Picture (cartoon, rainbow over the protein chains, first blue to last red):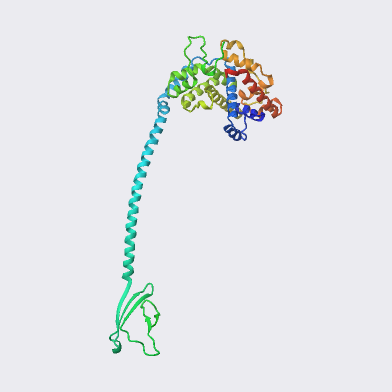
Length: 199
Length: 202
């Protein structure tokens, strides 16, 4: 249903009189309302028909020749565009699609290769880290110069970075009564000795 | 005489009737670079378009310049015409009217620059004031003029001032010393009545 306000705006629009501040809202309204759109089109046709009322005098006879001569001069550059534009667009889209598809396939292959390489590198890194961990361990076999401890052997595995180690004592005589063995780790990189507790 | 739609009107009614091309087909041929199609378009619509430019500019030479510019622009931009947005004749009228108004504004600016501009008293000259004898044999022109004549003068006046005078709503209101609302109402009633009078011939 079209009301008077819409009819008025449609009439002004058809005559090119609708003010610029009202124009966007009206065009939006028209886009949503097919009935209003149809009214506008019919009023535009009505307005255009006004031009016929002025068809009282013909332009000078040679004007047509002059126009055709002028358009003929620009014809050569003009013709290809309307004909070729749709084909050029279609061709461009096809080529672009093919290139994108090829590029996508290549990128997928490249991604798979990189993932395989990454996996190999990760494994190698883990292996090297493990080797490095082992490499930094210090292993020492200790023996005593004291007679009562000549049979005793101590094997120490020491991680200087973590300040942790394992001590294996073989044939260590029991400590005398009311005595205990106190273990100290002396690391040249550390200013203070590291207590290993007592046994 | 049967009513003729825009698409099937030719100024050469008295010549051997050829099968007329629909406007859309004609403009498509122009877009393909067919000069004969442009010539046919010229034969079909040059008179009302020239009349329109003349009514806006009141100068035959300038109106011919506008007509030439309009057809050159049609030749260059015919591929931009979209049938779904309106009829070809409406597109041609808009194009020609805009060019004519551009010429008018340019002329007014130049007149002001050279101080030749003078505020002449407002005078409205209706298209119907032009002699009818010159349009004998042109059914379409007669038909539109008859429809215009059925409008009350005040409605016809505001429509003509808007369409041919290129005045804004408020300029028309000022020139006629009428409230803006009255002008708008007259435009609405006048255009709707004109549409009803033209009926199927549109």
